[in-house]
Amino acid sequence: MPLETSAEQPIPVRTAARLIGDWIARLGRVWVEGQVAQLTARPGSGTAFIVLRDPVADVSLNVTCPRAVLGSIVPPLAEGARVVVHAKPDFYLTRGTLSLSAIEIRAVGLGDLLARLERLKAVLAAEGLFEVGRKRSLPFLPRTVGLICGRASAAEHDVLENARIRWPAVGFRIENVAVQGVNAVSEVIDAIARLDRDPTVDVIVITRGGGSVEDLLPFSDEAMVRAVASCFTPVVSAIGHEQDTPLIDLVADVRASTPTDAARRVVPDVREEQTRLRQARDRLTRGVQTLIQRETAGLTALRSRPVLADPVTGLVAPRVAEITSLRERTRRTITHRLDRAADELGQTRARVRALSPAATLERGYAVVQQGDGTVVRDPADVETGNALRIRVARGEFVATVERPLGQDQDALG
Image (cartoon, rainbow, N blue to C red):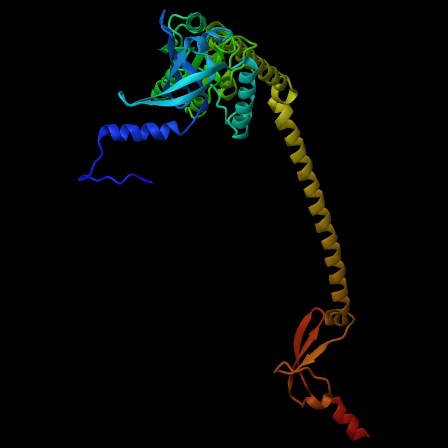
């Protein structure tokens, strides 16, 4: 039943502490998994004190452990180890604190760790965090390289030295963090966030030297993997050696086998680039020279042709001859056409002349017309004294009618 309290009817602290203790006591024994963040075992004391931490949620619980239980663990328990604790929750009324009283502690074996990593790997792969399509390409020449590494570590030295040998002007922003142990995950995640917020950082390198599976375990932590996946800046992972493959290698944009390989991938080699520039310049020079030589040879070939060597003979003379030939052909054609037309005209004139009245007049006939131009066809059309116009072949003359012959013939008849 819920406890009925109010501002007017509060309960004493001891009552609240007792009720909380009673409720926790009813939980019974539980199995808890975590990472040993701190281990305190004072000589002569029968109890050891452990701080058990959840590396993902960054939550800790205090564990009290009898020395006999601690001594039974093989190999001996050390800070950073992953363990499973069988314990009973206890609430101390006088201090108002919660702790676990360990009954049994089991170290998580390598096989269990690897199996859990495989299960986590399958979950993250199903979410698409390892897809090649989401990986970004590295900039050709970054302004600043963000480097996450252990303080004064060999990995830091390898990256800095090899990068500066390859490109002396490269700049670094170094974040020194714990690269193993209980604080490694949180410190690396915080460093990633800081570098990702820096607009001058073009690429982030996360590196550390080799080690055991347990030493590299923080770099397979789910929280760190998701932090790298959500990063806007390209990330290069250089953890351990070639054979080491923590999960961060799968989610990073580029995986480097070693810290030295990371330096090679992040910045170009100035000598190689100078060599490429010389080679490109030589190729361009050869290409331009070849083009000039080809065009020069083409111009020489054109100039050596007769048409360009002697333009008058090669160009003008053939055109003059062609035009002269065309003019002659045109003249012949026109002359032929005129001659044929003249012949046709002569034939037409002959036909017209043969059919003309003038031809009849040439044979001695004449055309008789009255004064008004009317042709006389009948003697009855004229009278004595009429003036008539007589047209003959060579001209015309005027005649006067003395008497019409037709009238005399009628009288005779």
